Length: 226
Image (cartoon, rainbow, N blue to C red):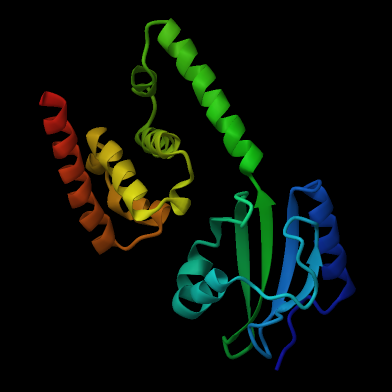
């Protein structure tokens, strides 16, 4: 059986250099699954998670590999949260042998917690500026193309909930979809496909949540009139 390509000095040096590039905010982890999923960390560069060689991978990552490896390879970038509440942006690349069996993975983790706080601060500043000029953000966005408009409203929904879409609970996703529906996002071509990817849910689940979102919006409207 082939060994993971990490078994060479160049790749080890590349991992160390990439970890230094993140300046303490990132790490690069090599997992070897040829024996078992437990104790899969065979090399790690960077101090982010505090893990060391011989430690385990997370249960959620194992579940993704076992149940949705093709989805992981199609969408390798996702968000997670550690036990201290820090938000990590992760890019995972699976390693396969000549028979296509998954034998390892290289994961890049980047702490984006401070960036999320900065994003929220910038949003507040920009909203104040546009409102001071007598314009709403919606007015400003009218001049943008459809793709940019959709990304804008997704960002607004994440700001409304206070976290990236991948980290939202079911109830929070329903609230976010209620907001997006109120802005007419579902009228955009292929919006459903894009939102399934953004929220990491199936098409069936998306429209089930959307039904709940519409009910949530109706109940909110009725309560506002009472």
